[in-house]
Image 1: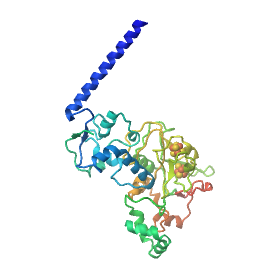
Image 2 (image 1 turned 45 degrees about the vertical axis):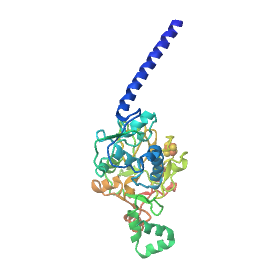
Image 3 (image 1 turned 60 degrees about the vertical axis):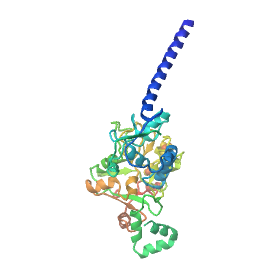
Length: 145
Length: 241
Ligand code: SF4
Ligand code: SF4
């Protein structure tokens, strides 16, 4: 019995050490890119978001929620704060999506371990018709949120 | 444009009188030119008229609807979502067969809205009945309440949704009268397809505009609601049943 407990404890310790090592590698990986741990969010299009970057970092979900109810119930379809507009502008030019490994939405939400519900109904892909009216994508610039 | 509209709302009755004087010009303009930042109002009520005499063995409307809204079949007809379907009527006495498209009838007094426990099922000011899937809990009361079997439950995980038509597992959905197109001043996909590839059996328009094609047609010949006995005052009307 005693022996068994020791083995289990050993296995747990080994696992924990392994996880720690993996974490370190990931952290140094992104730290190398941006000078500290955390995700690197890739920006492909446009000079400026619809609101200040700092404001969007804190309040993007409130902005989308407000617009959601206005669109759904009152038929107000201004592009500025619509989820569709976010996706069209922020979708990766290669995958066409805001999800996936380096996806604009996914990279931050995965790091913060926040589950996004939006895309269980809304498409995560940019609207091809809308893309034609947007400025062309540039090589990605990485910013740290 | 928006100024005209605000003025119109503000002066209410006077505006209605003015409309009568200047044969509906302003109303038609308003109906087509709502800007994206203006809320829908009850100055309009959108409706459909389907002439069954012209509707034959064709499913252009069904194909167009499901293409427009990204509805995919999983090869399970019993549970696949259906926003519009062709129904066949046969007169047992004479053997005469008719077909008609049936979709959400956009009732003025919608039972689906009455029973919804969360407020997800609702009627917009302009008469379009929708499900706010953000607050739908998937209880399916509305499916039970709808006399026209117009609603579907999404059983499967959804993929390849259209950007303008979000749809997701665990929620109820039905014909939106192509609300995204109507809001952009366009006609529903089924009506467009019926006029282009079908038998020109469908008319879409504003039931409150005395000069719209649909109002004129409804005023000039008989038409009926499905199950008029229920007094739901449906936005979809049929002729020739
Ligand atoms: S037809 Fe059914 S789903 Fe449509 S408004 Fe009427 S009751 Fe609701
Ligand atoms: S299924 Fe959704 S829309 Fe229908 S009654 Fe329940 S909560 Fe309301």
